[in-house]
Length: 152
Image (cartoon, rainbow, N blue to C red; front, side):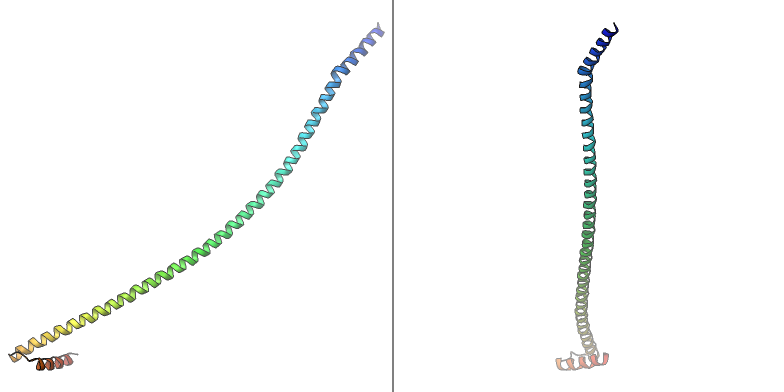
């Protein structure tokens, strides 16, 4: 009976080993290989991520440097434009002032001429009243010139 039990036990062990443990061991080895492949893949992905991050930082730094250079150039261009605009505005102001001065000189000359004519006509009318008669053009011109010289 012990011998039959030992043979039965051996058969059960053989059947278990052949149909249960061997496929289970094969499945465990496959699962281990899959896990190891996943770990290897994870390491590769981590390295790739580190490389991508380094490349991203380098690209970002280049972009920041380019942006800073463009901002510096834009400020320089803006300063040049502002200076040119200020010079143009100053030139326009100077031109307006010069035109205003010319207009004032012209108005002053016209006003002096008008005042001169007014004075001449007042002198003529005063002379006519004093003399009581109309003054001839020769006497008129002579008297007017003398009176104007005395006024100046």
